[in-house]
Amino acid sequence: MGLLRLLLVSLLTACGARTGLGLPAPGTEDGGLDAAVGRDGGFDAGFDAGFDAASDAAILPDRWVPECPDSTTVAAREASVPVDIVWAFDSSLSMIDDAERMRANVRVFWDAITAADVDAHVIFLASRGYAPEAPIEFARRYYPIDREVGSWNALSQMTAGFDDYRRYLRPDATTHFVVVSDDDSLAMDWEDFRDAMLELLGHEFTFHAVASERVTPTPSNPRGVCSTPTSAAYRPGYEYMALTEATGGLFLSICNEDWSELFALLSERIAVRIPLPCGYTLPQPPPSGVDYVPERFTVLWERPDEPTPRVLPRVGASESDCGDGWWYFDGSERIELCPATCDEVEALGGRITVDLGCDPTELD
Image (spheres, one colour):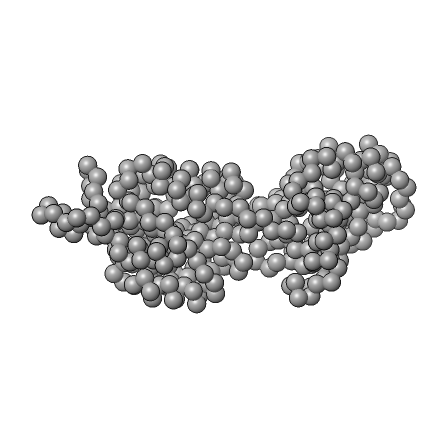
């Protein structure tokens, strides 16, 4: 270990500072999410070795001013465009078997989002008992909403219940809606839903459906619905078909008995990671006992060619305030570097770390 790290650890083993940023405890540097930023925006596996080699230079002993009794420092990582997914599941009695198929195969969906490393919020509207469980890694990212979604009102429930889940949507997210039903929307037509949701969201969205396609009617199947050896849908999902066509989404047959295939096809369209240059996301969920309060953050740029980190100033609440430094994207738990700072970081490389600060009452 270089002289710099020995001095830093001896000066501040448990405390951050407003003028600097504490390093992780010895042996825990890689315990959090850790990204080194290169010219191409990717990860630099050789960063730590280079930084250690450059850290033998002298450092002023008064650079670090302890403030917090128990500071937490995390390494930020490259952010991606957030993805919000809102499901509405027909919770009528005819969907009991479909609910079982959904619960038996939904792990395909969770795994796809995890594997793609997508910053996703998943909202699930259904009557009590119909919503699936989510794995532990989706803590604070999965929001089941108890809503009486019936055979023919999924679209109206998504709009009427918007205030129930509005707070879980991000303003800069790509938004997907998914309806699963063996019936059609009679309470609201597709044009009214599209117009209402565009106004509520303030941006475009993609709609997907798992419902019945239209098949040739027969005397035994006068409605022309899809069927399986053991069951049949009630109506073709005409409104859902139109919405998927209008928004570029997927229309999948509810009569496909292999629901792992349905979830795989949906995941392929939804679980898409789009990197955000010079955007840095914090670990989710936050470290135990910690709340993210950007006013308390100290953001530090650790460069491999400099012995001491550089504190980046907070410039305001939006990119319009930018000069040199960073701002916090409210609602998306993401730090954004100003364009000039971004260019410098991408050119010279290094690592962005964040001292989360402490509650002022902890200083009493």
